[in-house]
Length: 160
Image (cartoon, rainbow, N blue to C red; front, top):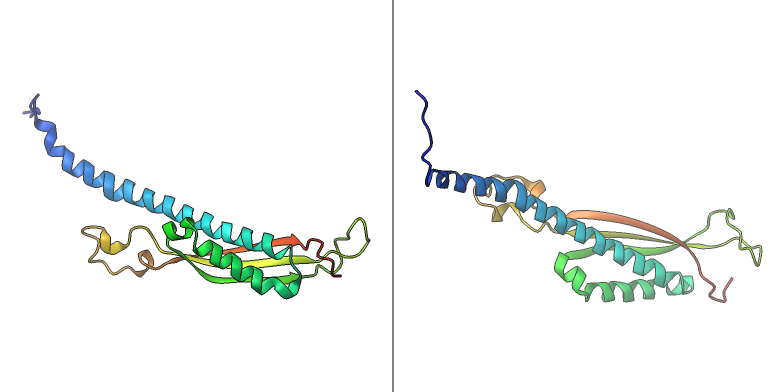
């Protein structure tokens, strides 16, 4: 004997499991991935700003330029929205053994290398998801660390 669903009102019983699957399996992870993508972009922007600022100053002023970029980035709304924090941001003068030569002077070019590490907390922690907060999985609540390295030629500063 074959049972048929009623033609009116029988599908309401399938709504709750469908919404549960939609939210827990699709919506929350998708929002977390988008949020982590924004956190990655925020860290890249800090690295880019620091490299640009340090390339225009002499090597003795790298610390000052790095500190000012850290403060500017921390006060921006991008870092505030993503909840990102600076774990490491440092600029170094790098010499590539004279492989690159300035066309005008014929002297080896000097480079700046900025290494940045940014920590981003996940948007949804495991404790905020119902029925999963009883699991003790540390990997879903720890911050995710992004590492960046940018190399640029040192711009003309009047110092050889």
